[in-house]
Image (cartoon, rainbow, N blue to C red; front, side):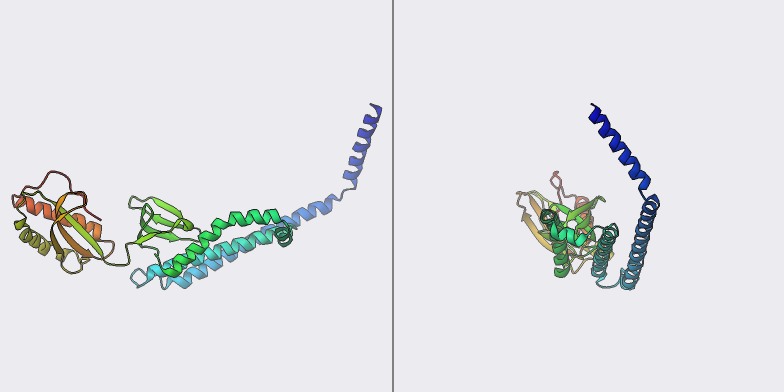
Length: 289
């Protein structure tokens, strides 16, 4: 018991002597100088980041005009360049902070085998996203503003980043898709699209009256829709894979306008047929995309 008390007293005395001999002025000066250095580095990189992005935006702004041909392509390159610049600045800022704190970043990463392995495994997804994003850009699979279908997601490409691609659905939902998950892309903005209009009919429907009704409707509506290319093609009576009997008309239109044209012309056809006192089946017709 006496030995324990003696040891405790000795430790307490040693701690007191250490605290008295500790150079508090140097310690406070070191903390203050490191804090000032870290604050200066952070402000410096914030300024560099702001100036760099300002220069990039000004460089691309003169070319990013909605009416200019290839503006979607330039917007894609602009956003990707901004992403690369942002991550580059972030990397050097982290490296500068760790170096200021005295952390031997290069030696630590090179010497810690397990850490390097874990880092490599964790970065596989990021590298895959990056490589896929660059491939999408080089192969021109899609650009910002294109209407696409990626897997089960349909919508308009709103952004292409190093890690993810953002697709905005028709209802406004923003979908963030990792680039490595993009395997099959259906781009609906590159070629002229077909608006297929299916009018439901029965075996007793007087389809011989349809051509005149459809032609009159087309003559009235086509001048109102400059996105239509050429004259609509009347396919006539067609059996759908579901077994439904329809009278089919195909309208070739500029990309992005096919769905509105499909609904507009189907409504007009049905109204004109009804005004001609022709009875159609009561089941609902679903336009084919």
